[in-house]
Image 1 (tube, rainbow, N blue to C red):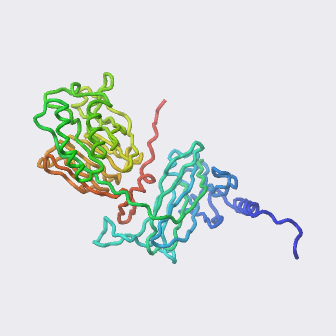
Image 2 (cartoon, helix red, strand yellow):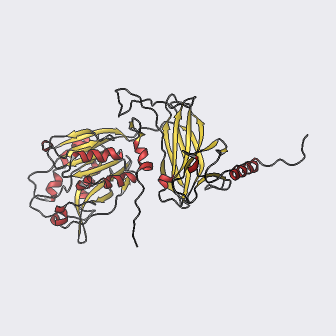
Image 3 (cartoon, rainbow, N blue to C red):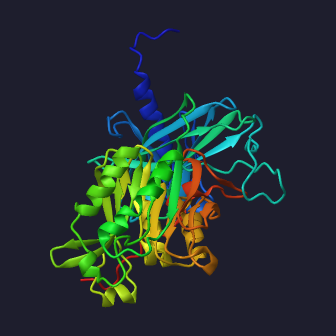
Length: 459
């Protein structure tokens, strides 16, 4: 029998169904809630958070998925949905996330993408793993972890990345997670997985100069001594060249006598060379700012302009005794090559500096360095999966610091051993390094590194 009553809008039916489902759920967990293909899950029922749909949620008011906890700590759950994919095709994942009342949003609200075959089984990647147990091993595809991008004024963060589906994958299992925070809420909106063209490679030629001027007495003489090696870099199509630490510091001078403002004579000199040869330069200099001295690295663009500077944060005893002031910030600069951070010499002994630069998105870390344990250079590159480009004053025969380009696995891709030569490595900044059992560890850093320690006893 046909009814004469007007049909309810589909959105109202959905809201009624969600309200009924939500009324059956409890904070301690219950049967999974299914919403438009999304299913709730948890490692254990007793730690299940509440899952619901807010039909007016999201930045556009068109609805959001909400996962929230009660006063207990340690609740852990997710919403999951399968998306069909074609193996070998690239896909862009995008979601908007808002985290309320969690100290570490990057850990509380996490996306995982699992590549699966038609039977729901894990698939392998198409390229051998770096850390294979046997040569030629093709690692199992581990979960992808899309990264946090910008956050708007209302607290909505874009979580996104682009991936190539492994050739044997037929589905991508997307999981929207809530983890551990008490009395907290994570909202998810506008979730999509869309086929896109393959991104173009970002191939750059990174180089470190292995050179220290000898028999020079003035800052200008020392600057002039670098002209041939910069010309050599240009002839070898270098895009990014790192020069040594405090390169204007001449023998017999004091730090103060070699200090200069920035911008100043050295940045003007190297700016002209950068523009002439169309490359990025990173010289190590001594900066004077009023009565203060800083050990700095300066990033100069191929147009000859200063893109930024970094003031050395960790000072050794000799620089403290010499009257230097430490810096306090970890700037990362956008360039046409990619995101660049800098550190100087003694900074390399401390993992916090490189980690802060990588936290802020650095893909390349320039490292003018007088001397350091080369194992620490390897560690800084490996633990952050960034390219570290070191230019040192140390002779290669000393079995100490090296002028090199370190890869994501911490191994030198290139090393210069003779004075007046270059270490040059061509890299693709879009190419990931996959580890056996870990997958893309660089993506895991943001989600798995410790939360910032609370300041206890602070007033």
